[in-house]
Length: 92
Image 1 (tube, rainbow, N blue to C red):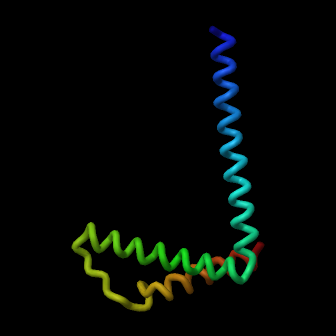
Image 2 (image 1 turned 90 degrees about the vertical axis):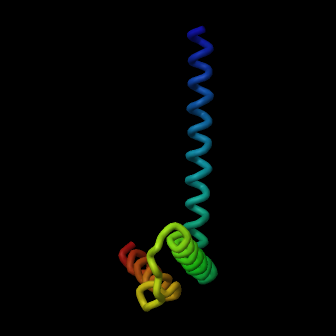
Image 3 (image 1 turned 180 degrees about the horizontal axis):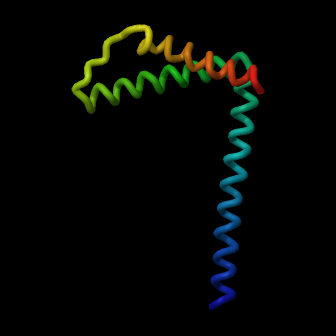
């Protein structure tokens, strides 16, 4: 029974390691793609989509009224996010 538990624990650890390696590889590929012009545009689209989805969720679940202005305009949110990304890239 002790050997069975050891084998089971080893299989579980191997599965955890496989998942961690797959995530690391995925992050590496995303990082490589983000360093291209097309990758930057994809990031901008993703950020804009997420900002819109977040505002839709707030609108469905809240009585808060969201008014468009520079701080909440999707393009401004993307521009602010890209400024942060570019700033971080310049420091790297």
